[in-house]
Image (cartoon, rainbow, N blue to C red; front, side, top):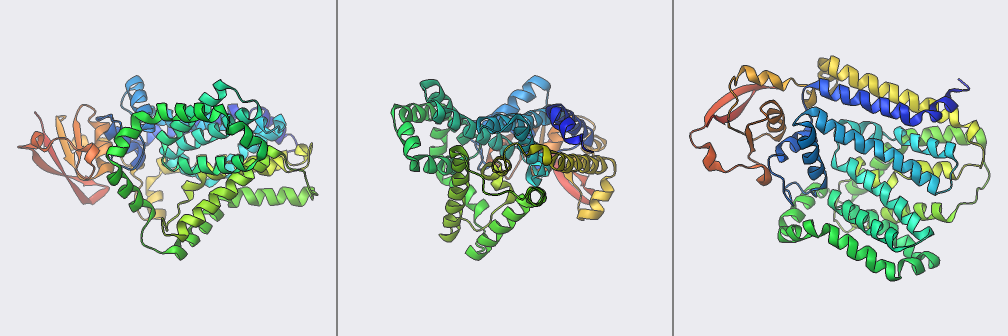
Length: 448
């Protein structure tokens, strides 16, 4: 047991590679996909500069490339997702090193991300755009720190480019930019660096890269803003908003904080001087919560999702490790390593059980998980691949596209997924069992 920490952290990135490879295998064997991936299968039919789901297009563009390279299948979808997830840990490690943490402490802080439920569970099960947002957020922190330490034109251009890519990955990324730049500007020395010729380079490069999406966004601004508003404001009131923010924060951090308390009780540390860079990260968290509380107070949104905290709190493991006593990592590395290995083992067991015994999932949740359904059984009802298929259900439509790869699949409730209605003239309606034998969905098919 005493050697577990050293062995784990020495081989951490290999362990993580094997872990994500197993997850890809599990995904491929499942047979179906959840909402985010189902959407990607349908969007493959219509690559665009703007989409109808209040999401920027960057992830869709990347997924389109992966489908072109590896085929329209679950492997291509899962490979992109897990390459992004693996990259998040690499960038987080580099960020910790940039903050002058030792190699071991950097590995401990990076692996501690796996103690955040939204990282180890939420990103694995469903989230796509959020995974890309987290990767770009980590890159933003890293590039900003590198730029502030030794500014030059190339670093300014890189920072502007990554800001543009963040905007193209998720609109909420702009809040992260605010939360970083406000404390940067409040620091006298940082402000002098930022408000120089470099601010023009950062701004122009960000504008140039994102312009491809800004123009269509402005042309459709009313519709997209309404879509976003519908997601974040449910007319539940400010009290509900504050409660949901508290609950989301509590659930997001609980496992990590429990392990950290164990470490604190063991070390009983005194006051530790905090570096200027770590203070910047702490101030960034303070600013984002100030912005969030203000937005809830004025009624902009009243429902806060746990996953929204990913780009804002992913630096917390690094912050917490950085403020522990120097050269004390040998006394707590085994605690973090054991906790992380237990979590990884439990998650793998849960995912293997989900795929092997889907009925157990149904008994626990009271409903079926769509990625566990064998959509290939649809071929029993549609023996010949149609040219056109129409459905009102996005989840069903995406999984049907996975089965009938050459068919044009229409999804009625999304403008960016609609095929011209004229193509369905003379289409035949069929009803297929969906989820179980008591639940049927209508499909409209046309063979020519």
